[in-house]
Length: 408
Image (cartoon, rainbow, N blue to C red):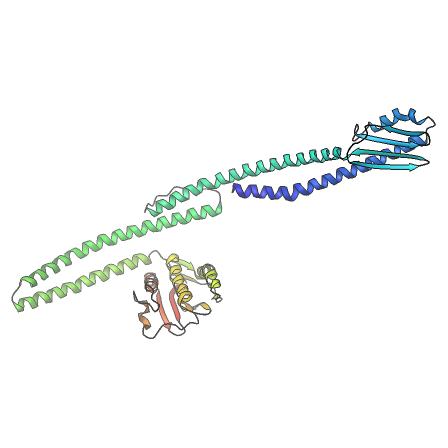
C-alpha cells in the first residue's frame, strides 16, 4: 500500500510538476521580455524629449533601471548623435535584449539569461518542496490506511488458524471495511457450522458405539460357539441365530445412517439457485476460455431451492469440472421447475458415458478416463444428504440432472 501511494504521488508530480515547471519558465521569459521592451521605450522617450547632453542623463537612466522587477541586473546602451551611453554592468554571457530605435536614438536594454535561470530554479524549488509535501502526505496516509487494514487482517489470519485447528471461539473483528467484515462474518458462520457438525459427529459416534457394541458382542459369542462346536445341528442353529443378529446389526447401521442424514437435512436452508449458478459460471468461465470453449447458463426464472449452499455448490462444480475435463464443445446449464421440484441439467457436446459404465458412473473408483472416480460419487452423496438426487438422464450426449426441492 505504501509503494502504491508513493507511485501514485510520483505520477502526480510528473504529470503536474513537470508541465508546471515548463509553464513557469515560459512565463518568466515572457514577462522579462515584456519588461525589457517597456523600459527601452521609456528610455527612448526620455532621451528624445530631453535637451540635456547624453552624459547628463546617466543618473535618470540608472534610476529607471534600478526600479521594479530585475532591478540591479539590467544593462542599457543608448546611442544618439551626441554619443553612446552605457548604464549598468555589461553582460558577459548569453543575454536577452530588447531595443527601440527612433529619431536617431537607439536604446537597447538587456539582461543575462542566468538571472532568468535562477528565477526558474527558484520556481522549481517551490515545486520540489510541494512535491515532498505530497510524498509526505501520501506516506502518512498510506501508513494510516495500512495500519487500519493490517490489524483486522492479523485477527482474520489468527481466526483462520483457529478454525483450521478446530477451535470454534473466534476473536471479534470490526474493521469498518465492508470486505473484511464480510470475510469475518464468513469465518464466524464456518465456525458455527463446524461446531454443529462436530457436535453431530460426536453424538453420532457415541450413539453408534453404544448401539453397535451389544449386537457385536452377541455376534462374537455366537461365532465362538460355532468355532468350538462339533455338532452339525448345533452349528446350523448358532449360524441361524448369528445371521439374525447380522440382520439386526444391519438395521441398526441403516438407522444410524438415516439419523445422520436427517441431522444433515436439518442444516439445509433456502438457496437462491440463480445466484449460485451465476457464481459457478463466473468461477469456471476463465478455465473454459483457456481451452477455447464456452460455459453457458440459460436464462431461468427466480427459483429458490432447499439445500446446503456449500454442498450444492460442490455438486455443481463437480459436474462442470467433469464436462471441462472429459467433455467437448459448449457446456450448457439449464434449470426448470416441475411442480414442487427443480431440475438442474448440465450437458456438453462430447461423446458421453460409455455403455459399459452406464449407471455405474456414480460408484466409487469407477471412471472412464483413469481418474479416481470419487467426484461423482461424492456429488451424489452430497445431493442425497440434502434430500435431492443426482442422476445420469442421458448418456450420449451426456446430461447430468440434479433434482432439488423447490421453496414454496
